[in-house]
Image (cartoon, rainbow, N blue to C red; front, side, top):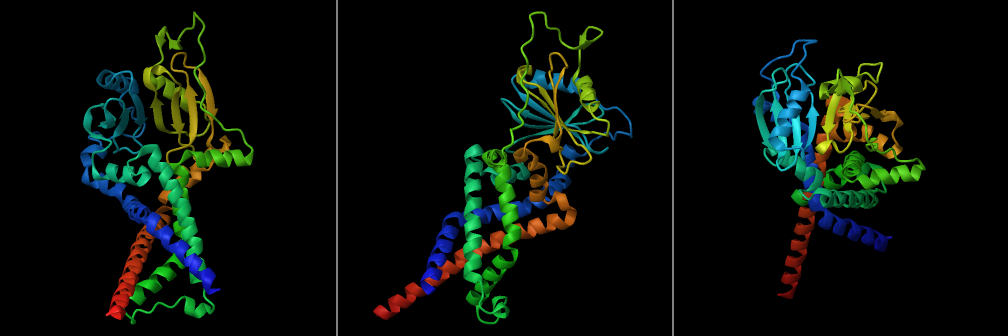
Length: 377
């Protein structure tokens, strides 16, 4: 039994020492990201608070005029993502992915630019890129997915090592027997009590970070992946959709997207691809969708104004549909302040477990080396 326990101890120790550094950072940065958006808005009101407050029912700036200005400034090769204001005092955001990558913050009533920020500018952006991909894009996301798997092994091995013969003793935390013993007890009891909460946070983060996980879920379910439609080939005399001979504007396409639903369906995002080389995507925020940004999509051909597909969030393939719950579960938005607090606590605990584990290993190693030297003399 002792020999088997020694194996589990080695597995736990070396997994922690190899992957623990990333887990420490992921936990602490995740906890910080729970409060970072609110702090970012407070610290940068010129970016997030609109100069003009839209009255209920008041039409804002024409999206088409904003689109034309952005195309003039950044070219047709830039990918543009519009985030309409979701509250009367919010700015209209336009995310640019081209030669310049960043976000424009516009007055929703006039379209006047209130500020701009590159995607690597500002503490909030830097922290998010580090937390979500370690600043390594797809490679970093894959690393985080494998580190999440390592955490699951850490959790299992830690529970095996903690599992008490007498349950009353398993929850004891001796705070009067020195720092080393106190940290050891806090480490094992903290891991046992909050390990599952941390596992949910780590697993959901990995699911969002690495797309192959969602594809694997769909494949295992036997379902067919729901893909974005492609632009059809136009006939030689194909005509663009128009009203009175004029091409439809982005505002008219947006109205067409909203009209696809009988229920109220605000637009969460509008994705305008480069050179009109792909359908314009409208992400809709339906009332029954748990995702805060909406997972329902309306795809419209920007050349003909034809609706190519309407994909409700609850009709997507299982791998994609799961994101509607996984994302707000990971951020805590699914359960309001209570779940956000739990997510932050889990992140802090993960960081604390990693730091205390490394310290315990280093301290005990130092004690053993000192004892060995003393015996030699």
